[in-house]
Image (tube, rainbow, N blue to C red; front, side):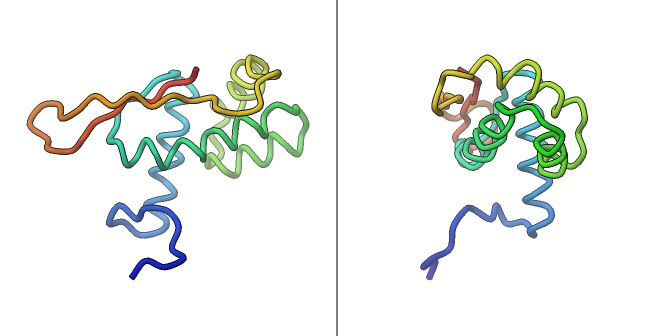
Length: 117
């Protein structure tokens, strides 16, 4: 049973899941939109929104926190602090939107597009 178990495992080990979320969040921050499965989109949404909220205050501590969460991706950290977070200064949350695309191509997984609002 999955009582008190939070989050999806995607059939991966913890380090692999962490790398997956970091990569998806980094691509979302840098490109503004990514296409992935619905389950992955739903998992990366709170991770990315937490990073954007943290990036609203620009300090050395914030940049170090973001770098540790994103695996020292300096380009993504700079993008959050300088481009993305100031755009949402007055917004209290809900920085991303998930649009379901249905089954695409030969894969049978439900696909979705997650984008910054």
